[in-house]
Length: 271
Image 1 (tube, rainbow, N blue to C red):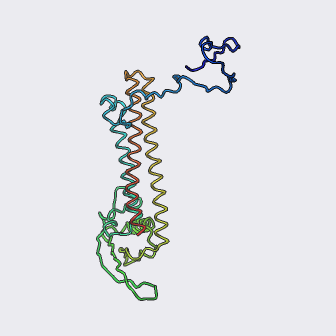
Image 2 (cartoon, rainbow, N blue to C red; image 1 turned 90 degrees about the horizontal axis):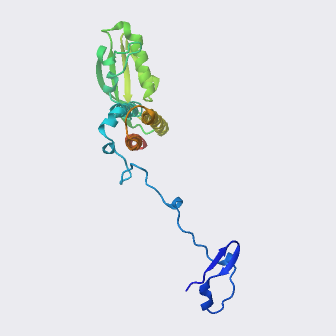
Image 3 (cartoon, helix red, strand yellow; image 1 turned 180 degrees about the vertical axis):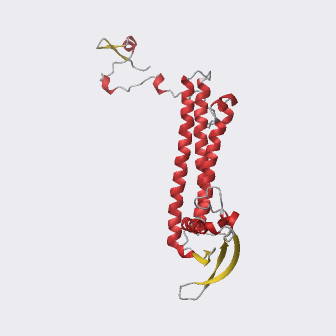
């Protein structure tokens, strides 16, 4: 039988059961082991409305609530940011620049006009000697851009092509005059290691920028969900909680999609 020591009104009193036990040496109370009964503070409560799987998806939020919180508009905004990121890294960080990319160049001072709508293109392949002392060669593509149909746009076309070449990292010398209303654009060729590293650095900046844009979308719609708690809308608090958790899941998912796009592009740039 365990010896009991009780502390009553500041005095130590032996339990009556001790009279039936052999005399034992006194043990100071400060030496005795301390046992604490678990209290409510040590119990972990599960967040109300959270799913057993730990991830709240659209299926955990009633359709009417998702419509009220403009889920479709939110997903469209995420999709737009992701699409812009994908197009930007292909346009600015692509080692395989194709002549077709010239078609979509937007003409300066003409918002809805593209180069492919006003110009004729003649594609030629040529050999470019490498300055490496070995005399090896690489293929490069020369594209003749003829805008004789719209001679008044020659200066705007030149500025637009120059801007495009700067965006994709080609030197200004890649654009040469080929006549009063035509230009010769040299694309392809060699991309140096330093240029690859610059492109990778720029790509990471674009990735982080896109994620910040996605975070802004999340904050916008999370604020809408928080506002629904105090609004006149008769939405259950549990549904609001699940909706906010679902919104967190969405932004994380689009972050991951952007990561996947960048990982593929970075591998190509790294060679």
